[in-house]
Length: 244
Image (cartoon, rainbow, N blue to C red):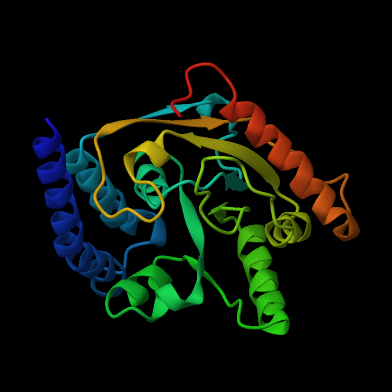
């Protein structure tokens, strides 16, 4: 059984490495040649993620979609335990959203241009001034009708314990004036812990909380918003039926 798990994990990594440039080219084909919308072009990354999940033997269940209002923009704030969080959200979360991602990812050949053309938002963290410019640009995009996923912890948790939430993403929410949805991703740390390369099969639950109205928060209270949101994500993680 251990050998099968190892071989499956190895196959999943090889498959992901091989399929990623093809998926990126597919997205660019949709956007640059067929001139489709960003939303239509999402079929490429969604298929990419679903195939990787299938090869890895990972099943994902999403709970709480009924709490979202169709046509509205949100900021989804999720805990971050594993690189597999990205595949699970991209492949199984049925909502039109983009990513806030570090600018270095946008420099990767083929993948980077596809990431940018698909409407994902680069964040420059090299200096305070550049970071502020990036956050303001992100707020304007969200005001224009774009939903995004953020990881307020800023990095992956090694032991599964929820880290402190940073206030940068909260500033975006307050400036954009959109609801922030607490999101708990349960089970990915078992599938691919931080520092590991080969994934294991398993089950993941993505659980959504009620959207948090940010109208009562000022920019000076962005850390309070981060703390309130962290508490709600912790509540979701602690509910019954959430894989560890």
